[in-house]
Image (tube, one colour):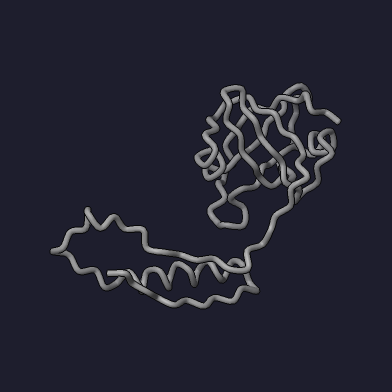
Length: 153
């Protein structure tokens, strides 16, 4: 297994804006094989400066003309979440971890009560939450969405 491969972080263009592709790690086919990864496997990324992240291995659609170069294309979401910068050198390893699908997700109000502007009354937050969660549900069907709006105000 080619654990010693070093990859260079490159941008994924066009950037994945939908949730299903946000954490994909786009790796050239030859490198997927060297790492014993297949599309959909979880993989761990480590940079020399200590940043570590986990993503979903995905086959890059671009052909790499230089066999000595090992690019890994990451979305803005992955780079921002784990602190990877364009041009960083990272290693990638297969992980035995599996994706566990949530059976329930709870969203709670975490507003800092000391910083609330009492002159503003925003009654539209319930509608915005329902709309956002409804869009989320469309990407992850079948999903049962039971939205009970509760306020601690």
